[in-house]
Structures are given as C-alpha cells and as structure tokens.
Image (cartoon, rainbow, N blue to C red; front, top):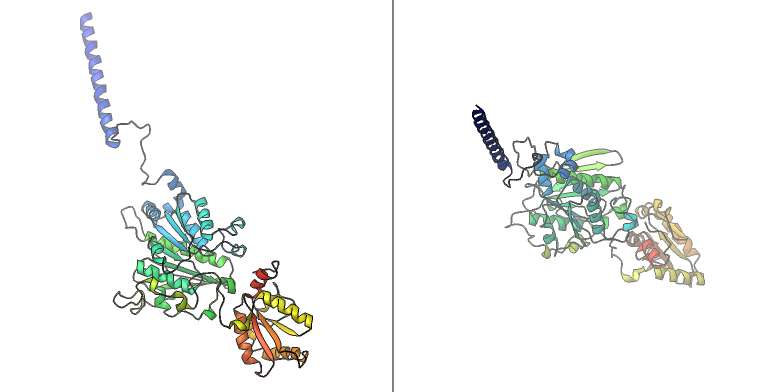
Amino acid sequence: MFHLIFIFFIYYVGARTGFMECQNQFKKKEIDKEDPSGRTPTVPAARHGYLTKDEVSRYSRQLILPQVGVEGQKQLANSSVLILGAGGLGCPAAIYLAAAGIGHLGVVDYDVVELSNLHRQIMHREASVGVSKAASLAQAVRSLNSRVRVTVHDVQLDGSNAMGIVSGYDVALDCSDNPATRYLINDACVLSGRPLISGSALRWEGQLTVYNYRDGPCYRCLYPTPPNPQFVTNCSDGGVIGAVPGLIGTLQAMETIKLLLAEVKPDTSNHCPTGPSFSRRLLVFDGESGMFRTVSLRPKQPDCAVCASPQTRTINRLEDVDYALFCGRGPHDKDEGLRILKGEDRVTASEFRNVVQSIEMERRPHLLIDVRPHLETSICSLPDSVNVPFEYLEQRVDELKELVSRHLARKDAAQSPLSVYVVCRRGNNSQLAVERMRTLLPPDWPVIIKDIVGGLQAWAEQVDPLFPIY
C-alpha cells in the first residue's frame, strides 16, 4: 500500500512539473512575440505613436486636435522653416513655431539689437543690445524648446547667397522691411519652389498673405514695378505700434503651421489636415479701428518675370538681377540715406556746427528750418530751429517767405547771401525740402539753401552724444 502511494506521489509531482514547464514555455513564446530580445518587461510597453513621453506632454494641447494628431506633430518635427528678419515680425513668428515643435528653424539677419528695437522685437532683451539679432533670437528659441535645431545666418541676404539659404528649408517667412529685400526673397522662393509667407506692419496697420503656394501668385505677379523709393516708409521712419507686428508675426506662424499640416496624408485615425487661409488672399488689419478685412488677390500672371514658364520668364539667376538698381535702394533693412542733392548743396553735422559758430562770431544772420512733423519736435530739437513740416511746405509758403524775408532784412547788403539750413531726422526729407523750397522762394532772393547730411541722428553721432536718437 505504501509503495502504491509513493508511486502515485512521484507521478503527480512529475505531471505537475511538466504542466508548469509547458505553461512557462507558452508564456515565453508570447513574450518573444512582443520582445524578440527575450527580455521579460516588468510592465507591458504602451504604444505612444512614436512620440516620447515628454513630447506627448509638451505638445498635448495641440496633439488632441484632429487637424494635428500624432502624424501632424511628426510632420512639424520633420519640417524646416526659414525666418528672414529677426525683428518685430520674426520674433513672434519664431517663438510660436518653436513652441509648436518645428524641427529646424533658420534665422537670417545681419543687424544688431538696438535699444529702439525692444518695444516691438520682444524676444531680445536689454542685455542683447549690440548683439547679433539672429544670434539673440536663436538663443531665445533654444531657451524655450531645446529640441528645436536653430541655424543662424548672420549675413546680409543678396543675389549671391539667397538661393543657397532659401533652398535649404521647406518654407520661408518674409519678415523684412524694404522692397528690395522682398523682391529678392520672393525670387529665391519661386526659383527654389518654396512657399513664402509674407507679413508687414507699419503704424497701426498690418498685412499678411501667402505667395507661391500651389500655383498661386508671387510677389512680382502683384507688384511687377517697385514703388518710388522717395515714398517708401518703414517702421523706423513712419513708426509702429509694437503689438501690430506682434499680431502679424503670430499669424505668420499660424499660416506656416497650417501649410505644413496640409502636407500630411489623411489616415484612418481621423486626421484632418488643414491648409493656409491666405493664399490668393490678403489679410489687412487696422489696429486703430480693431477691424480685419480680407482682399482677394489677382491670380498668377503668365507674363511674370520670375514665376512664368521657364521659356518665357526673364529671371533665371538671382546674380543677374541688380535689386538696388531695380528698387532704387539696396536689399537690406538698415536705414540708407537718399542721395538727391549734390555735395556742394549739403553740409555735415560737424561742418554745420563750425559754420554756426563762425556766423555767430561775425554776427551774420542764418536760418535753420526743421522739416520734421510737429509732433517729433517735442521729442528733441536743435536750438533756434524753426519748424515748418515738410508735408505742409506748399500750404505754408507765405509763412516760409515771411520767415526768410525777415532774416534777409537783418542782413547787411554787403554781406554774403543768407544761409538757410534744412534739417530732418535722418537727412532724407531735408533734401526733398531743399529742392521744393528752391521752387517756392523767388529766384532773385540772395539765399543759399543747404541740408544737413544725416540730420539729427548725425548731429548726435558727430557733435552731441547726449542728443536723443529715436
């Protein structure tokens, strides 16, 4: 009996052990299907759409949108965007694109940060004054999102380098501030097949549109002829409310994101790609009234110099285009003085100071006319200057004649002609004013009219370093 019990026990233990081994082998096979390495995970690996835990957390608020989703986020991460201009438009555009997870940002700007930039170029800091704008903005982007690769192009864009830079990115943002640069950027985008998201801001107004997108028009289609450089105004000359470029730059980022998401192919995960809203349309914002309006743009022009067919277009190489000659000014954002008057009709700020000192010693009368808008004279002005705004010269011609004749009366007949000097902010309107005054005053009056080269800014740089520059 004992032997039978022992044999049964041995049989039971063997069967039990065999069953457990089979069960373990079955489990191992199931694990190997999920993990070929044979390692046994302590917790089953969760599927997360090829985004890391940190990426899911960082971009979670846009990931749950059907227009984005995992595929859209991957598209943004694999995209590259070039921002041309690290100023009032480029700063908000860059920072929102970085926040959205664009994989690669390029920043083009050869200027340095100035104190007057900070009211609208919000990603620069007081400590950045004197630093490269492109480098300053790149640092701000990296501080916000270290996952974004940033390339700094601290160069002046021109016909020799524009194609090489623009063609290295998927999309370009025009955040510049002068016509020659806009034509250059447009031509580079067309010839390299890149869409261009263009923004502008001046005073209380802003504009936004998308060029060269899916057979839409380019900048030259709408503006085949550049404006007269004498009538071109930028933020530096005309002023701007800082929030206006902030708004337009943010909208440029929005259009860029939508354009990139439109390239994602719809899948079974309910992904609904969108697209830019302002291709073939122009958004106009009026900050004073708080109104937005949209204007339809004319279609792509078959005779366009750059986006027509290769057989008919006249621009095939940027190096062959003289943008400075075409627009009357070079392709850069720095202030460039007009050259209307001859050298003998102008004096430098230092020469004007010496002339005034000599005239005062000899007690000879002279007249200094400030042609800036009256509002600007409350900011700063030179002693003994008389304000006659340039835009009102014709309307105030009688006042001008009275002013000059009064000074002529103080002059002895034997003395040389009356010296009349004209000053403005930077020496541009003063030249135009000299030409206009010569036609308004009687030709037989003994008067010599000259302008001060560089205006009040030159006075601050050459004569009085404490004189405010604005």
